[in-house]
Length: 382
Figure (cartoon, one colour):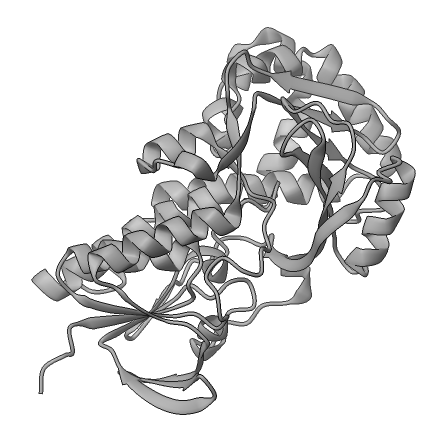
């Protein structure tokens, strides 16, 4: 009996829906299992995406864009500041619920079947055991794609182990106040061990304020952060989430199973952002599936297609590991050294929030940056 040429995608977030749409376009029956009752809710994302990444993906964000930003203000634990800015849009603040629903409509238009309130319980070969609307069901699919987030059950089913050091817990809320709508803010300090606090403006009067923390209750970190910086406006949409900050997984396939997105650690360890990287990897995943069904190519070719993505993700991980190794005093000194070396002007011209390798390699060609050699070596040796 031949292989069933169909695909079951576990997870109805942006990455899962994008994989499903790209597979369905190639003529293979695709079904998405989404554990929640509504696509796009609950929202567990800061919703900041790079313009360059979205352009490369060829996605029309349309009415999902709430704000456009052109730079970032970064603050060390002791209050040292770095400002990176452009004179044009570098990133979009999107409405994640609208964005997910937009991808959902695209998937439906392509012919993808989406089952809500459907939880994948286990996978045995081509059989996917599910709980749908409270009742047990068994689905059959030749390939199963795990796009089920940081706490991926598909990843566990593949026998891939992780530790809590591979993640940070986050807490975020929308807070009313007065904000500069053109800049995001990143705040480093003891309130956010292993990560940082952020301010992502939706407008001049509302921002998404959040904190990531390793080994600490994120709600406690959040409360300390908002008190420290006096974010005392009316709150709404409070959410907690788990974000992978470990190395991207090298093994993303096993037999008929594949991993993509947060489930595969395809997130930027520096910032936790995963939409652009995850959807880029989704294209590679869908391409590998098409080649497998059409040409009998091994599913493992998916891993080979991730070379460029993984190189960038590993660079993000090395930077994160280096930053996490610094004491408060070392962090402050680093900011001072970076500012004196002219890093702000350098990043204004060369920076890319998705692809650090594009500018890290150029440091050697800027004499002012040579004084940063110990730090660069410290990152590369991670």
